[in-house]
Amino acid sequence: MLSVQKFGGSSVANVDRIQKVAERVSRTVERGHRVVAVVSAMGDTTDELIDLLAQVTDRPPDREYDVLVSTGEIVSAALLACALRTRGHNAVSMTGPQIGIHTDGVYRKAKIVKIRADRIREALDAGCVVTVAGFQGINEAGEITTLGRGGSDTTAVALAVALEADVCEIFTDVEGVFSADPRLVPRARKIPRIAYDEMLELATAGARVMQSRAVEFGAKFGVRIHVRSSFSEGEGTMIENVETNGWGEAGMERVFIRGVAHDANQAKITVAGVPDKPGVAATLFGALADERINVDVIVQSATAVDKNDISFTVNRDDLDRAIEISKSASEELGGGEVTADENIAKVSIVGIAMAQHAGVAATMFRTLASHGINIQMISTSEIRISVIVERSQMEEAVRALHSAFGLDAPEGA
Ligand code: ADP
Ligand code: ASP
Ligand code: MG
Image 1 (cartoon, helix red, strand yellow):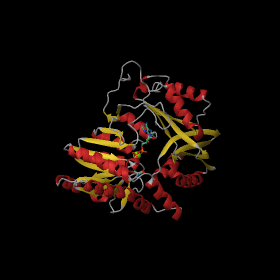
Image 2 (spheres, rainbow, N blue to C red):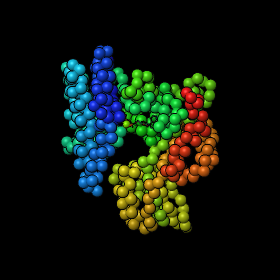
Image 3 (cartoon, rainbow, N blue to C red):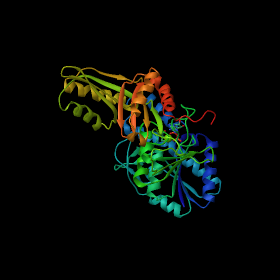
Image 4 (cartoon, protein in one colour):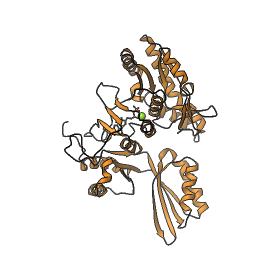
């Protein structure tokens, strides 16, 4: 039996916690499993490294950004290997490049293209526990790349695929995947089993408990992913192929909505007064795509005869570059001013069964209206509806929707 176990930042936040992780890995080894333990950087190390860089330069080269932030996970991997060795295990730490996690050339959000994993296999065959620095790989030019925030989840699931592991466990600081972020919604419920599609939409909508890339990998290769707490022993959430017929676990009530997600890490850009003619959106969004900037919600509105305003949201980390690109695209197109608004957030409801049920959107909009929350933009997929609202109203919106769709756990549960 081979287990890939991933421990997130809060699970390895200090030496005591690393010792606890070592104990847990030891217990798994003692049950006769072979273990690959993927670790994140300790606590808020990644944010601290990014802050350090900002103190040195406004415009860090992407290559140096990746070299710097990849160091956080290397520290955790080496410390965990040493903690395991003091417990009598033969343990060895490895970085992404040492393992052979090959990525494309896009720094900061590289995609894994191939994993060689020979060294890991050899180490496992030699009876070692392998601790792995998550979140990183190597590109064709031999440079270090990182996999985007939350990328250690993807390292773990991708390794589970490459090594044909029996289980991939994601240990984190909550008991599993909940119907909303339990830190925002105290009455959120733990979801025992969730389909890949629903988890993917929740993750894409901002539920950062799993990186969306990791869920995509899991779905593509059918890896069952167990998200669970590193601080307790209880069962968490299984992400797997779940047949959903729209009825809840007890079969008593219709479950249209599986969860509510929020994303406060978005910003809105508006390009005013662009000509209303073919090719305008293609030029603007083509230029952004060329720079690998993901655009999320888009709205186009006619403001005068032959003129449109185009508004769209991007990840806050990409905002400065997106503004620059939008300004030069607007100039090229004969458009007007480019403005940005960081005071926004995205709130989404997700559920496979909503596709078969009319009125979900209406309930969502009515609920927000009754709380005086203005909707700035809307986007939908078959199993998700997202709205952009003012940042200060995000929490109220999440709680109100959670109640309105009957997701609140009973009082005192
Ligand atoms: P790790 O460091 O273990 O990777 P993260 O901070 O990346 O942990 O993810 C865990 C956090 O995700 C939780 O602390 C919780 O606040 C947040 N979260 C957001 N949405 C959800 C959700 N639907 N279910 C569980 N946790 C969620
Ligand atoms: N340390 C990285 C981050 O904070 C990767 C991870 O934790 O998964 O985003
Ligand atoms: Mg994470």
